[in-house]
Length: 381
Image (cartoon, rainbow, N blue to C red; front, side):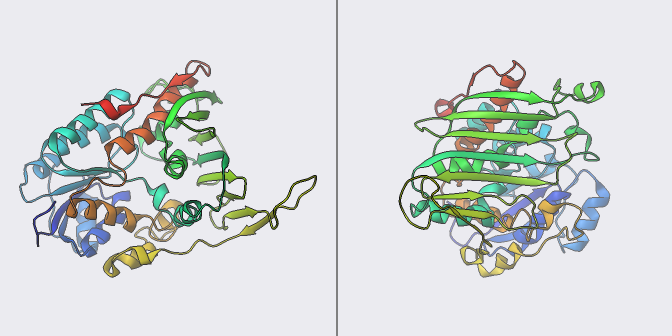
């Protein structure tokens, strides 16, 4: 727990997409100051001026050696996540990191060990479980409105042409936490095993970095202590489909489907009257999820609607505060978990349970759908 009266001093690493978080930390009532670092000096200078952030660093190592820094939020390329997270924790600082946690079981174990050894907080900043849509579904789910769940589905369709080099050839399910985490959070369980098939064929030059031949992967997951099967599809290239990070869940009383197009509203399915028999009526309703500013301090509540990236070039940045208003909720949870001296809601073990299924799924796809067990990381030291 932080000392009484001590506000957090946060270093934000990466101000491309990471720039979304600078004004939220700046305005949070439990944060004394936020400083920023980016390997691109032009981006760093521009962000410093735009957000009135005077504290900057020249390298990540400077941040790790800076005794004034309490916590580091990493918004960096996927191949760097594990190494940097371990370094932050080993430096005795709390660590938040964008998804995915890691891309190998070994690196997941290394982060868990570093977190346990350091005693500092780790949080994977998974946007999907703080979107307006998810918070609405979670509220109804916890009230029992869905009844017994029969099936769930996740999807993340995104055209990555023109994105930074490290995306090219990335195994699709290495970046699938957005699609599976809402379902695992709702069902309060983890994945036991997976069958997965790759689909399509990447050009040879796209296969070289990661050895992955697939632009798309589809998996079916079996869960621990659950009868529910979960299907997840993830595409990165060669698939003409507008951007969508989505989930659907179906119960005996109620069903939910994320909107097909991001500009639309999600659908809720219901049965007007109990009963059985051929042709019973099932209703559908497009609903607008409420904005949950009530869950946030007044100082940052408006950030559920404000977006740094307002040019419309990337829907996930402009859905009101980014990713359907999730960004201030993530910052608030990370900050408050440190202040209150408790694990974050997406701590190292939770992050492992949401990240490892994608790693196992790709392994299955590379073996033509052979079943792969997902490790239980709770015994890692």
